[in-house]
Image 1 (spheres, rainbow, N blue to C red):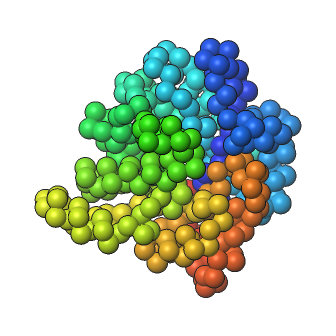
Image 2 (image 1 turned 90 degrees about the vertical axis):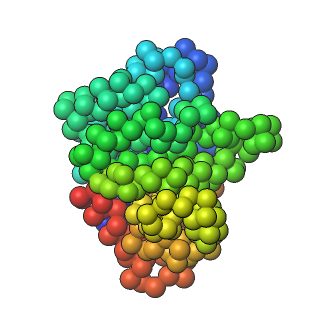
Length: 318
């Protein structure tokens, strides 16, 4: 069974809200996602999505919202998040064997996020959570959000951290249109380093944390990370690379077999879960290829089987 942990859905109600209120093209169509990609929660789009899953051999997708812009308005942020959670839950109820859902939270608003988390659990039956990596220049793992992670840790929740695709709020990226080509890899890497600095995997040991894109630069940065962070943060109770191996990483690499082999060696085959960024790959190799490349990356059959069929279904209890 293949479980795709990184699949986006933009409900029609959310799309309409963002366009009418903020003139925001949330899916960045057609630059990043083709106009005809089945990304909404309409019956036609969901039916086409299921057909594409069948073609790719995917049994289950874990649905998440697209990377929302920072609205800087608590009321609107809560409204968008509630629209998304309700819509995704309806899709999962219509196709209980094909979809599970990440709860979206109205961060950076902590009290509202705790309230929405409880609503998702109690009313919608959603336990896993999707969190964007930053809120403006504030990290998603800043100290002010500790009460949220304490609650998620208490229940052993799965937390998927997705890049904001903000270019790290840096003109060094945004002025060169590098938000999407380079930004996510840097966001993923920076977020993990921030987690390590705050000893996140040790302080919240029951969290099941998923980082997309094989952790960005991590597979080629482990030795430098240990050397330099080890010297600068002498109070770390274990090496940064040891803490990293408590995390999960999805396999979205735009079909780079070199990146996947590097991640297997440095992060560990048993920490990799299948992810596709559905439907973004429709501009490139396509959905089936975005997962099928794992079979042709030069890995032994046992490792291929574990990555495609064991790790993610076990993590999500499927």
